Image (cartoon, rainbow, N blue to C red):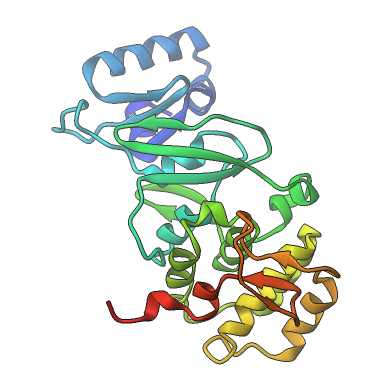
Length: 266
């Protein structure tokens, strides 16, 4: 594939992807690297980080171009999947606008910043780390001329309740998820149980029960979560905030969450 054709096809790409496409016609890797350097120098390409590039649209200043953050997050590792609040934002269901973009990966990593955007790697929970699609609920969606790997809304809900620190607090999580009109509750429960966490099962069950009418939650959806809930009281919040015990789920829930105080008029 000719370089310009490649750049038109892949708005964000890795060094390995370009070399693979360019050398398929018999060219050498040295020639591929020389072409990358040439187009970087001309302003046709932008280096996002080592081994990762973005195409600069014609006529734009490469110093002012910000590549699509979801495409960038997807390309930061071979197994990267946009997740948590970033996935909600991708699906158009985030209550607040963030400049932090989380992605799941099997490996440990460090946050990375580019043009005012932060990219945060989150290691996949061990029980699902080696499973296909990290346990399921991963989509490939066309976006901004490329393709984004992103979690489903069902997995978003479970992942956020499994790691609520990635959601910006209970108000942000609740207000965001309440924008979703429909969940595949069977898939949601199935993925929850795959994580093997009693407190996550209880959090998900409690949250679904709070929205029983809106999402048409039935007892058949809650029953497997109840069977997996903790035998002793656990805190809803990882910060171990005090509150009232919801005995059905063995969860100590802050009163602000029980009463949904963020819905009160100012």
